[in-house]
Length: 354
Image 1 (cartoon, rainbow, N blue to C red):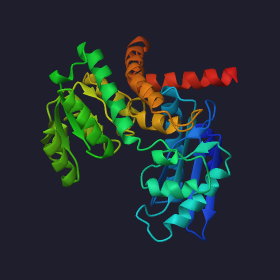
Image 2: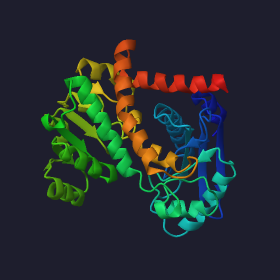
Image 3: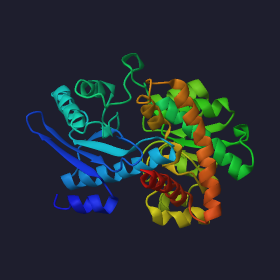
Image 4: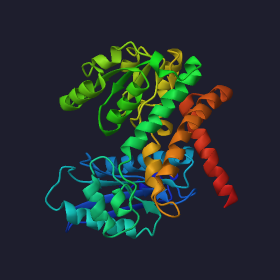
């Protein structure tokens, strides 16, 4: 771990906290990338990383990404993230581990607000809550903001509408077909919005029960995991794993638009040129999927959680997507580059006015 300060300088982090509590098996890293816009906000994930260096790399990248996601969403929050190096399926000792993690979050005095993420669940966050108020996504009856998944889905739906407006001149989804990869918490809500709007939807997932539910309830077409890349559709909607748009899959995609909920959808920046050469309109994932973090941020607004505030901010994702797509044309830059620039420009303005 000799390159910690190099990582801070490389990504521009303000603070990285290492937490070691062997008595409960806690090995955690909390990364605060920026507080220029306000307290950092981002989830806590649990993974069995191949090395401590890999965990550090993951948490610094993710926390930086949260800075730009929160900024482009118009939130008064910076970017943070936490990772716990442990088995996500841990049962024995889980309560003690998350209570200790809560103490670590508390020690940052509000500089970092945590939430549920990969490998964690609402029960974990309740343990964290016992030792800090700086945890979001708790049940509504406990003063929290509730499940963020429906809001993420609405945000993705709004982005799809905006992308269709730019690409086709109208938002009429009854004319459109969508291939949706991943029928999880967000995916199933998104299917409901798409089918209600009249879109033809083709889906795939690793879980047969989820596919059966989607087919029975919404009449979607089900295809195999690999077949989803060959579907002849207007919109490809990745809602599962990251780095799914790469040289291999891009050769097979037959779509005009890529717009989905998954994080880090592109393999890397080298894919930008290939996407443009195929004349595909890419909607940057951290713009599209910000509905969930908007809902988490709502819990910390003055006066407490207000669903109407969340609804307004998630509706704004339509306008933000339009702004990114239109500004991309004006600047002559790839959409993801433009989104990063817009997010950074808002942060810079905050620093200059501080």
